[in-house]
Structure formats: C-alpha cells, structure tokens
Length: 590
Ligand code: ARG
Image 1: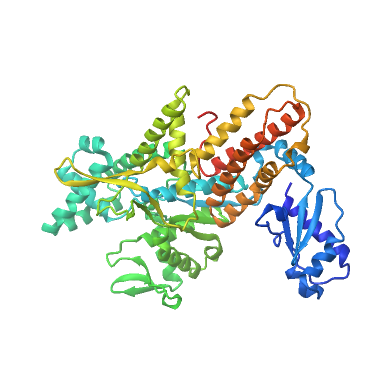
Image 2 (image 1 turned 135 degrees about the horizontal axis):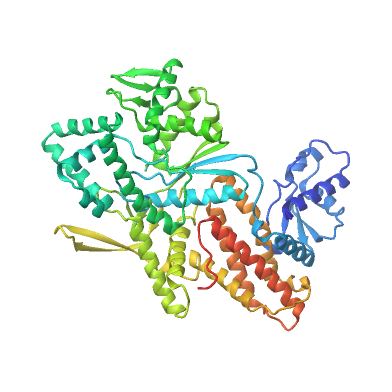
C-alpha cells in the first residue's frame, strides 16, 4: 500500500483525462510528489511546474484543470494552491487500507525487493590487531551493522566482512618485543593492553638502538615466510585481540560472515603486482613501485616499497578483486572514516585502470565524520582515548541505575539495562547523517595513574543519551514498551474495528508516518544513511505518544477500542522493525 505511488497513479490518470493529447510529460510522477510542510495543506502535493512547458500553460491553471477531473473514493478533496495540487485523503478509508495492509504481514512492513538477486559486500568495523577497540571504531561498527540489516530487509544478499588490520612490519616488532621482554602468561592476562605495552617499549628502545628495527623486520620476514613457530605467536596475538573484540560485538549484537583481513591477501598480492606490470601501470620511483595518478590529480598509489613489501593499498586491491570473484557483488561498501577518502579514491581509480569497470559504480566509500569526546579528538598518543568496552559498560551501569529508580520490580534487569545502555550509545551514533562529526559530552577528571603519571579520565555525560524523553534510543524503546503494555491490557473478543475513530489529527499524523516508513527504509538503503531510519522511527514514537496522551485507547465502545488497538499494534511493529534496523533491541517492558 504505497500511498505516494497511488496518488501518483491517480495524478497520471487525471492528467490523461484533462489533457488527452499531451506529449512529452514526465513519466515518473511519484518522483515529483511532495509532502506538504504542514498536514493542514494536504497529505501529498503534486507540483505542476514541470508540466508547464509540455502543456504550454501556467502551473496554477494546470492544477485547476486537473482538480476538475478528480473523483475517487480514497480522496476526500483536492485544493489548488499556487502551482500545487494538494490531495487530502479520505481519512477513514486511509486508516482502514493502511492498517489492513500492515496487519496482513506486520513484520514485513517497510521491507522491499529492490535487492532481490543482488549481493552487497559490507566492509565495516575492520579493527586492527593488537590494538584495543576504541570509540573511533564505534561509528564504522554501528553504521555497518545497521546497513547490513537495512540491505537485508530490502532483499539483498549481504556479506559482512571484518577486514582485519593484521599485516605489516609492526607485527614483526611486536613479536620481537615479546621474545625479548614478554611472556605468555602476562600477555594472556593483560591481553591487548600488554601487547600495546610491548610495542611501545619496542619503539622507545629502538630509538636508542637502531639495530632493533632490523631485528623487527627480520621477525616480520619470518611471518611472511610462514615460519611455523612465529606464525603460532602471530595467530595467538590475533586470537587474544579478537577475544577482546568479541566481547564488544556480543554486547552490540554485531556479526560477520568473514574475518578475512589484510594477512589473508598476503599471498594474493603477487597476482596484483603481475597484473599491474602487464597492463603497463607500474612505475619505478626511487626503487618503489607506484601507479601514477597525476592525471586524476591524486598522489601516486604505492604498490611495493623498495624492499619489496606490499602496502595497505596493494592488499586492498587484492581484496576487492577477491570479493568480486568470490561473492560476485553488485555493490561493495567500505564503511571507513572520511580521513581515508583519498585512499579509496586511489583504490577505485587503480582498479578501474586495471580494467575492472565495476570499481567505478559498484565500489563505494561510505564515509563518516570524526568522533570526539568532550571536544577532543581521539588519538592514541595524546591519551585522549576512550575504549569502547569501557564506554558501553558505563552506559549499561547508568541504565541499570535508571531502571532501579523507575522500575524496581522489573524482571531481567541486567539484560534490559544492556539493551537500554547500548541503545543510548548506538542511537546517538546513528542520529545524524554520517558525515557529521560526533562529540560525546563528558566530564573530565585528572587522577594519578598506577605508574604515578597523571592521567585524564573521561566520563561521558549519560543523562541526556539515557533520558526517556526527547530524541534518544531509550525514548523510542520506552514507546515500544508502552505499546506492548497497552496491548497486554486489550480485552478479548473485540468486534471489527471502527476506523471512523481514527480520523482525528493525531491518529492521522501517526498513520501518515507509518505509511511513509517503507520509503524511509528504502531511502536509507539508497543513500547508505541509517539516520533516515533513526529519524523515521523517532517520529513514529513521538506521534504515538501524542496520540496516547490525547485519546482513550480502551474505550467504552469496543469497535473504537479495536481500531485504536490495531493502530497501536501496527505502531508497535514498526517501532520494533525500525529499532532492529539501526541495531537496537526492543524490550517489551522497561
Ligand atoms: N583497519 C583499518 C583502520 O582501522 C580500516 C580498514 C578498512 N577496510 C579496508 N578494506 N581498507 O583504519
């Protein structure tokens, strides 16, 4: 029940009736259809400006002429305002048709078939081995996870890939440091933090003793050559890192189909180099091999260092080709911060120059803005770093406190606290368009660290994000729980709904939003913008609450009760779907 399409079809019919001879009119009228800024001006507005030339008539006159040809049961009336023809639905009919359509397959409302038979690869989260999962990786993780769900809902086959950063000389250095100063137990216990400590120590010692660098490289060479003893340590480092990351993925309910990271492509870069050579794209530059991109106003793409080592780009070229050949994707998305904009422009250009035409329109860098805490950008070296597990833990603890205060008798408090805490964090991350920088407001305190050095502690200011009011995840979740609670009180054996009780402004406002939800999901998919779903589901929640305060749902008239309950049920389902699509749980009680 796509109302926009229906009105567009209707406009088409009217156009035909009013101007039977006309030629050269726009074909897709749905694309022209607008939503008036104020519902008092109608449910949909059809702008006549683009018809003016073909019909040789002013837009207001066209609107007048079209208006005369309207005669449809689903339309209560039309109004001509300027060059617009505004349509007003027959409210009762709209309520009946829409709710019947939603209730026929509630869980599918908003889904689509745009992606039927198509595959999308989504590269997101893509953490680095031996580094702790910090909030800089929050956006890629939650945007990617949401896009995966959205694409899936639109009928695509999705392949989610965690392109691990697990290749490079730093791993040789780390193993070197481990061999010199580390031991198994300490790493098992200290996890990623201990690995970082070893790496930091290596770098400071190497400043005093440059020969260490060479040693580090030699260890990396052993990884490259597949020395079993060294590989064992390397894989163990990976396992330790992934075990840490898994905790975060479990809390967030994020999953991957593949963890093929950079090391996976180590033996696939030879082919890339050979191919680049054969295609005459490789150039020498001080012993290194590059692809010159000057013609496209970009710095060269580095393929091999002078010592023959491959680079981030080399492995990304191999990865893109591998993904195409393995998954036959129709789209390949890279959810990575905008700082890597140039990297991806170069990558796609090189692939295109290699003759892989698909790179141009199927590969896409889904960029997002910077994350900062308390106005300070995140940087490992300055120490202004907030780890994701700490952040989530804080949010969950706070949510637990809120529950204790508001619903002391709730069952399952820990799980609900997880859902709300995570909901607050994820929702804030997906509230605005991707490219917008996000700053988490926080309180800073300085304290003495274990080693006697001064350290800054960041505590995010959770009050706003966790509020059950306003534009927050918990607010939308709370509205969902409210719908569930209303439905639990529903009397048995109700008669058929009387849709005439849903013709008031509040009910109609809610119904309009429910009817537009599918379009929001489809736009979010087309533009790779989860926030469009965040906004849509928030608007539904707000409209439901408005309706809830203004109307008695459990009425003396059972047919009226039936109608309002059905609308509540439809709303409950749409909120549940919307929350799911942005990666939030929907607790039935909170
Ligand atoms: N590991 C990289 C980072 O943390 C992101 C990798 C993104 N994916 C890719 N195919 N380059 O910056």
